[in-house]
Image 1 (tube, one colour):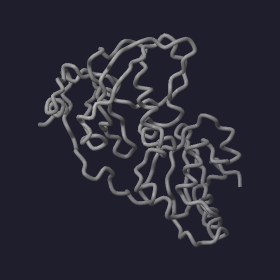
Image 2 (cartoon, rainbow, N blue to C red):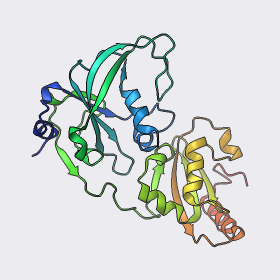
Image 3 (cartoon, rainbow, N blue to C red):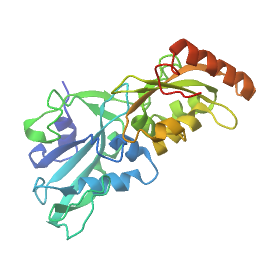
Amino acid sequence: MITFNDVLSSVGVDPVNVHLARHQDTRARGRSIYAIWKSPDGPKLVEEYQAVQNRDRFPVGGFVASFVVTAPPRSETLFIGLYKVLSVGRCGPGSREALTGIDITGHYRYAMAYDDRLDEYKERLVVDWGPGARSWAQRASRQPKPIRALRDQQEPPFPGFGQFCIDVHDLPGIYPGWQERLREVKGIYVLVDKKTGQQYVGSAKGEDSLWGRFSDYARTGHGGNAELRHRAGAQYQMAVLQVVDMSLPDHSIEEIEGWWKRKLMSRDHGLNRN
């Protein structure tokens, strides 16, 4: 069995000097760390986030091997980089954390330098983190993580519209190829409140594709819908009910949307108001 420690040793890095950091923070403005990492300015934000800790975790002179949890359905522990810890100080009064915006006055702030010796494994290597998911920071020498995959193709095949299902806050981090599939079609979708089970049926029509409509929800939390605006903080799962050709006229899409509202009774017992 090949472990991540074997990979470290192969490039001259002693696992004794390495801390493993697995990032999966649900406080990050309703978005997963993976989703933020995949955004244009994401790597810099995640590096700033990693550099601040509420206690002294990373020895100066040592290394941090960083991982993020990928988007569902795989939810894998993916390697994103190796960093050397150069120095440590404290955050000044009024300092705010890069992703959550919380006050980090007095927290430890590390200066880290990216180490390119594991570049060939970046966003390709997947480890089995094991049962201690809550223990997000661990010493590599004490936790030899088995390597589960080393991917030449970084993203799995699109599961198909009938099986596509994802939490709204995870949407920005889905694979680029999956985004393209959602851009290719219009259709009918459903949002399900994860706490109450109430459903909202909507449609992507006009100039919008399913990706465009879904992105509105990920950005705003309500997609401009009057009923959902009053439900701040609600967490939704989204799925595709039916896809239609991009050339189908809006009135036909609205008719299909109406059928689904009747079938799911989302006006009587859900979140639709028309």
